[in-house]
Image (cartoon, rainbow, N blue to C red; front, side, top):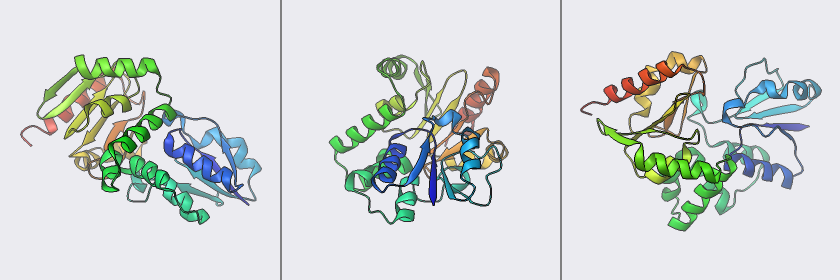
Length: 249
C-alpha cells in the first residue's frame, strides 16, 4: 500500500491532496507550513506504516526515514527535478489538468513559468491569489505587504530591498513583480529572489547542507534562511553581504 505524508501547505500541496483523494490514495496531513514541515511531525505515522511504501512530500528529514520511505521534493538538492505535483502525478499515472499545470509551473518557476505556458493575466492573478490563501496569508498580511512594498523598499546595487512588516513574503513579491533582484527580510528571516540566486547557492553551500538555508525555482528562483535559523544581527549581516555581492553587476 502507498501512503503519502504531506508537507507545508501551499496551492501545490492542496492540489496534490486533491489528486490523492480523487484516486483513493491514503495520506496524512498535519496542516504544516514551510517552517515546521519536518518528517518528525509524522513520527507515529511512520511507525504504523512500516509495511507500506511511504512518500514524504516536501518534508525536511530530521529523523531517520527508513528503507520504505521516498522523498518527493524540488528544493535544495532536488531542485533539478520536476515540481512535486508533477512527480506525484507521474507516480500515480495521473494526467494534470490545465489548471494543475499552471499550479505546478507557479510552484517551480513562479510567474515567468506560468507565462511560458501561455497563461493569461487573469489566470496568473487567480493562481497567485489562491496560492497566497493556501499559504495562510491573511487580509492583514496583505495590508502589511502593501505597506512594506510602498514604504519600506529601497534599491541598493540594483536590488530591491524590503524590510517586511509581515512574515508572509509572497504578497510583497507579487506586488513588486517584475523585478530583476529582490531581497525581503525581517528580524527572523530573509529571502533573495531573481538573478544571481545560483551564485548565492554556491556561496552558502555549507549553510544549505546544515538545513539553515533553502533554495528552489531554478537559476532565477529564490534562496533564503529558515525562520529563526539566525539571529537578528546575523540576518542584517546577510542583507549587507548580499547587497555587496551584487555591486556593479
